[in-house]
Structure formats: structure tokens, C-alpha cells
Amino acid sequence: MAFRALWQMRVRRRPFVLSHGINARCNLSCRFCEYWKKPGQEMSTPQILRMLYEAQKFGIGVYNAWTAEPLLREDLPKILHHAKSLGLTTSLITNGSLLLKRAKELTDLDLLSVSVDGIESYKELRGIDLQDVLDGIRAAQQEGHEVLINCVISGRNTEELEDLVALAESLGCWISFEPMHESFGIDENVWRSLRIESIPAYEQAIDRLIELKKSGAPIINSVTYLKMVRDLDPRFKCHASEIILHVAADGSIGCCRVHQEPLGNVSQGLEKAWRSSQEKRRETVAGCEGCLFFGYVENSLLFDFAPEVMAHYEWI
Image 1 (tube, rainbow, N blue to C red):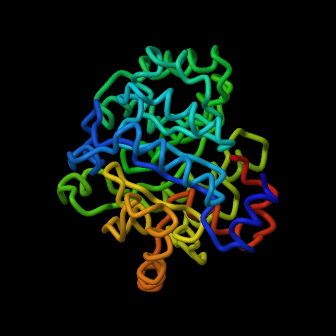
Image 2 (image 1 turned 120 degrees about the vertical axis):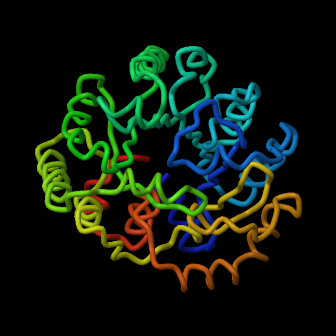
Image 3 (image 1 turned 135 degrees about the vertical axis):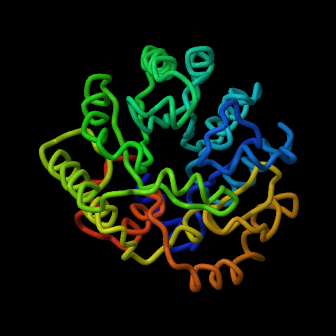
């Protein structure tokens, strides 16, 4: 896959990952999430299947279904099967609340990521019992899935990060971390309640994650990235808009998760929509202050052949 990805991105200068916000609905109402607050149109099954066919022809190698909650779509198994039949690596990001019910249907899924942001703080953050999600993770593992737990760090869970690593180890899962991104559309009172209150305690918690990573804990993040998280300093050149094609639930193409304004639509034809949005994406990236979404940082560093990241970033 590495050679195929490099050929696609470096030689053909095309994206390798299709990141698809597959629906506009969610069964949770997390205060810090903006996606469930934006009800809107969703692509039909035939439209998605057509998009995947065009993606494969365009050279894309990974299909990632996420947001708001992919497992709410009854046609998800059909979509994953179609992607898999085209030779795409299939990936899913879920809140995990429906995994116990639907794990058996995910036979064409390669990579499974489940959001778990705390232990004691989990119910406050997500509004449901953590045990329900852990039962779903175990059900997915019984079906043969390797699971990545993804934790978004906030002021509510900083003291639980090491415990989350221990939880991942006890479950036989990988775990990733990234700091909460304060997106537009969320009330300022929410951000005020979730911001890091003690920077020294936060830095100490991230330094402990770095120690655990170096000692062999199942943390997928590179040390390079974790140091950026500790310092809250996105010191990297972002290539996210070059290597990832972002498609929203209604088929609109955007630059990334931070800059979500529509730049085109896959109804134009996927390749045409990608090419027609190139100049606007370049302008957007040039004026961006940066973020610390781990998928953007780690993959941008891989794109630039950062040695430590190439050696120690564990996912895909």
C-alpha cells in the first residue's frame, strides 16, 4: 500500500484517501460536536456507489466512512462491500454505541476506530454509559476486527489519559490521542467548560503518554506528534487537502474538517470536482493557522518522510 500511496500522491498528485461524512444524523448529542447539529441532505446509496467507483478509477486507495454516526445507515454494509470489491481499504469511525447490534454486518471493514474520550468522564462527555461501548468493542473483536480507540483530550479527561492507555491494553486495542479542536458553531460556554485549566498538569499528562509510547504501549501516535500536542504547536506543513478528498453527507467537497465551506460537489464527477477546487484549497491552506487533528498531522509528516513518524506511527 505504501508504494501505491506514494505513486498516487507524489507522482500523480492526487488524493489517496476518500474521507466521507456518510450521513448527517447521530444518535448522540455530544455538546462539543457540531456535526449532529447540521441536519441536511444525504447521498443516496446509488450516488455513493457511483462515487466509490469514480474514486477507484481516480486512484484512491482508502475509503473512510465517518460522521455523524455511520452505523445509523442501514446500507452501510452494502457500501463497504462495494468499496472492498473495488479494491479499496475500508475504514470506519464510530461512537460505538451501535457496535453490539451491528458488528456482525461489518464483514468488509478493514479498519475500525471507536471514540472513547474518558472513563469517569465518559458519560458526561458523551451522554451514554461507557460499558455499552466496551461491549460493542468486544463484539467487534469477536468478529475479527482490530480496534483503535480514539480519545479527544479536553479539560475533562486530562487526568484519565494513562488510565485510557491501560484500558486499551486490557482490551487488546490500539489507542490514539488528539486535543479538542474548538470549532465554530459551538457555544462559548461549552468550550469554557472543556478547556484545559492547568497547562503544567496537561503537559505532564502528555509527557507521560510519550513515556508510555516509548516503553511499548499501544499508542499509535508518533512521538513527534505527541510533542506537538504537548506544546499545542502545529509545527508542520499541512498536506491534508492534497492527500485526502473530503466529501460531506450531501456530496459537497471541502478542504478539510477545519475549513468546511463547499468547493464543489461529486455530482459534477469526482475528478472534475477535485481539480476545479484545487486553487481554492491552496488558498485556504496558505491562510490557515493550523490544527492538531492527528490524521492530518501524522499523514502530512509521512508525506514529508519525517523519519521518526515513519518509524513509529502505527495506523494504516
